[in-house]
Image (cartoon, rainbow, N blue to C red; front, side, top):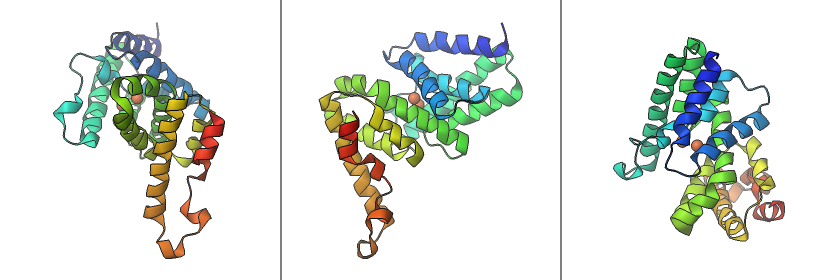
Length: 218
Ligand SMILES: [Fe+2]
Ligand SMILES: [Fe+2]
């Protein structure tokens, strides 16, 4: 077995033991989105996409309730996922350059910041809307899901936003996503243009996201 296959199988094994029901599907679905966004994604990106949330699958996972700040929680989760992956890569003898790049990407997977980290962040975000949101909504309810959707929409790059329109969701989730989109649109308008100089084109870079289009697309 080569080092890549060894690492891939170990990651799947750990994620398969997660108490969070959507974790396994999300890991594979993030890989699917990554390959859709970049068909020739390299090995570091593929391993990072599969393992980015491995922290969440372990009994000692980083807990939301241990942090006042959501971003600090997400950062700690990303750091721990990278540390767990580093151990797997070492056990499997993954080439140092691939291992260190995959860990770097995982550390950045919640925020992006480089072209490849943005790509991983987009794949992760799209997968959230694709396979996590239905279960998250059932578990957490409208308000928390709305907050999480807004947080997710803020981090998707404009080039990847178009894929949201192709997802099919229930009427309830369409309403939720539409609500989140309106919040993000308003934030963008407020942040980018003083009211006196606003134009439709300049103040609405999220136009692809407009609620009508989203509703039609689902
Ligand atoms: Fe994550
Ligand atoms: Fe994720």
